Length: 523
Image (cartoon, rainbow, N blue to C red; front, side, top):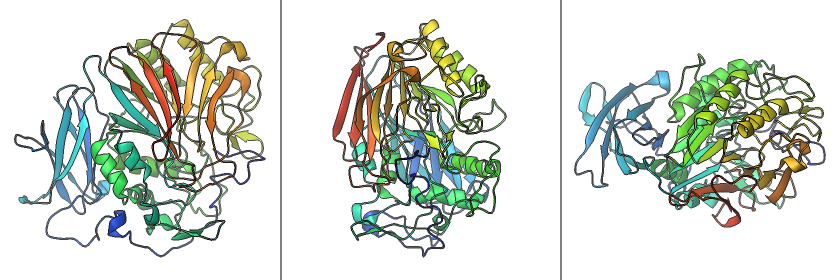
């Protein structure tokens, strides 16, 4: 996403041309760096553990080793691990950058699962490293309270792991809320934003970054993309969070390059490889290696879009608004079947929403619907294109989807997104809209996790948004620590089915609350 005229320098262009080869600095132990990478006698898991794509009876556990190793996962009903179940996983090696995933099946619904990952010498199982523990809660089988968090945008605009402020401190405040899972709404890395050792702030003070060789330049090679994903795991708060909170990940543009779309040829002097399709393939491989994501193959490639069912109260529809989109343009086409989702993903979403029996259907969108997100002086990056009239361009797909939701009487849809680096709440109402054939709904925006904060985008009136809440910086690229970082919380009551959205700041303080009742239209 790029801001239009009047907003100052676009947040994704702030570091263009900056940060050449930088000296690699080590994160002090107090700020939580991984230990030095000198190999000892046994395999180690210095980048922590993660769990993801958790269902009522299964989960996926991730680890990265410091050398070839056999992944072994032990699970237990108690933290003491008095009685364990052992699952032998794959041998991890250089073909996956020493990352591996092991699926856990037959788990009890609605229970806290304790696990620990051991890495063993492939040739001598007795030589195993120190076990690394983790935990997650399986989805409930019946009506039970559900709590999850969402945000996005990590290490953007050159604001990396700053040991002076405790690194990615937002993760510690999120961890304390003990959510069932965390939804990362894209821009898990900034492959196109190098991390320099230091940044001089407007007041003359110095922002210090932990840096690595791979993050000293834009990511082009597979090794550089892998290094960009690995960089975030140097942060102790993030590793602690990953060990206790399962993740649901989607991707957006900065996993590859600012505002990219399939078939694009870059006009960026920093890149020797100009083909975004080549860069995207490398990033997708690293993305699949560095997250506990159950890659699907229905479309012939690693699919990011999917639905995760979390008991009878919640289904989460994870979209991919990047892989199947058409080229960014002025967005005035009267016909647009490809749009931002692609025809196949749109049909999948309509079909799965119709099949869903969950009380609440959260649509995890990596880009906002009614916020005008520009790409240069004439093109648009997201759905809206600033024309308040009838749907055109990518708006046509969203209109088709909203019409489908209304005519199929699908209730309980809530849209969550990030991308724009501020937090807000929009209510969409047909009485205010140019396009009226839809049922009212809410869209909530939150982020960034650790990136520059940016001023608010304009609203497009096509779907009749009204902004009920907004908190955004007045200037561009406000660094973390200056009231510019946000995350959101969704809590669903097991007894009543009532859904509460809270927009929170970096320290966890509640900025805005909205309570929605199940089955009620026009809230």
